[in-house]
Amino acid sequence: MPVAISVEHLTFQYPNGHEALRDVTLDIETGSIVALIGKNGAGKTTLARHFNGLLKSTSGKVVVQGVDASKKSASEMAREVGYVFQNPEDQLFGSSVFEEVAFGPKNLGMGEEQIKGQVEASLSMVGLLSYAPEHPYNMTYGQRKMLCLASVLAMDTDIVIMDEPNAGQDYQGFCLLGSVLEQLKSVGKTVLVISHDMEFVARYCRNVVLMCDGRIIAYDSAKRVLSDQSKLELYGARPPQVTRLALSLSSHGIEPDIVTVEEMVRVLVERSRKTG
Amino acid sequence: MSAHAITVSDLAFRYLSAKDWALDGLSLEVAERELLGVSGPSGAGKSTLCLSLSGLIPNVVQGTMRGTVNVRGFDTRRSDVADISSIVGIVFQDPRSQLTGSAMTVEEEVAFGLQNLGVPRNLMRERIAEALDLVGLPGFEMRIPFELSGGEQQRLSLATVIAMRPQILILDEPTELLDPEGTVSVMRAVRSIHERYQMTTVLVSNQPEILVQHAERIVVLNRGKIASVGTPQEFLRKVRYLEKLGVRSNQVAQVACRLDERGLWKGDYPIDEHQAAEMIKRQFLGD
Image (cartoon, rainbow over all chains, first blue to last red; front, side, top):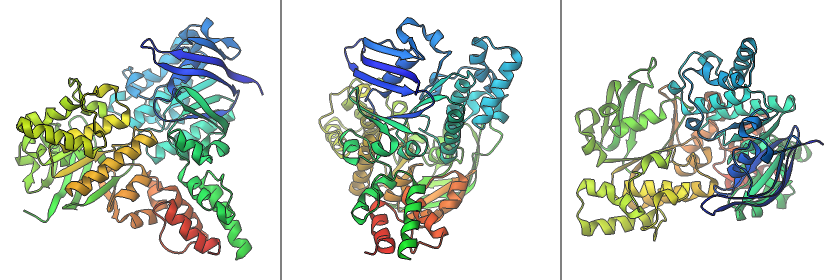
């Protein structure tokens, strides 16, 4: 598989001396949906900010779409990597929802027709098309987060990074984000999602990176990482509730690596057919 | 004084510049010492309810209010915010919006509210130590608030509020922005406070595992009205209805519901994975 992001021996030290990343090495395949998990302060955001050039490594190498990230400016990187911030107030500034989303495409030099098309398509993906003329500050926190996502989607970058898109979202937002991920996957985009919501990660992400203290502790399929309870708990994370259930039923012959509600239901329905 | 700590009658509120009513005819009674859970999709009116219970609506936040809110005998419309704030303490989602920003140490942060209440100095030390102890931050007195983790900051917010010994505690999505460790530590603190002071507590959350584990009764809001009210078991029974409203249930109840729809589940839907494991062993695995 071609690689979208390649990191080799990346170390990053903040000016105050705090070493936020220590010898991080990983490859992210083109077209994959990868979750970054781990407790606050693990280095997830610091790592992700190297992928769009917001941070420059202290040592080691970050290669994005085949080009050394240290040789590119943040504005050049913005054409390839879209970054959705955790806090909408860090991102929003436009006077209308439409203007907000149009800002990125305008900067990329798109024509007026194309901008309109991009803005409408992205707003519709996050369920905010009818809000186009409104002021962003009249929206709820969850809607403002969706607006930030739309303004990144409108730039049509090959790589999209989302920093805790779930935080502060209700179940509708949860499902909407899931459908955005599925649409991005279907057109071959590479997506990196930072999240504490293990139900979301299990349902929509193929691979999971577990981080702690600036290091990568595990990088594997969602099934493998999310069912390793002792490792997750050692590093301040937790399997989804349905996996904790599967683990406590493993002595009764239930597969311990069930990570979604649907899988658990399927397994139990089969069981009842056999015994029924 | 009524037997209820909180009585809300036909409450409606519309923010100054808004077209729609954020709350639209809501009536609710909360018993003394009850731990009430509140859930609902975004825009349902959860935060507006919190602001109304704390008297910030209508006394500080501008808009149009109908109906009444009564907290331990005080009608919030006829009382000073200062009087209500000695009865009702409120903790917000983002600890950074709660902390003063001017306190150099954790101790000063907790002392701030006490000074405003005019608590004598010798009693203040005691109150601060007790509050920090209850939220699991003993020995943090000289730490710098803004260098604490999210979970620690949120527990500090809790400490600043409970040091003032309110009779009612309002928690507006206190763990929504925290990681799993931070969430567990904050909920442990909420539990200890509730057990120690028997404080009437209103806990707003969209995290189903937390709600069903801690709340005695759960109210679901939708479009400014009450859509559902009942015990955690009754809440979980409505998995599909709640999904339609935009409220998630815990995963083990989702499993039970889907099996139930195939005629394969007997009894209530489980509160947590331990209960689920016992029920599944009995019903499916021949225990």
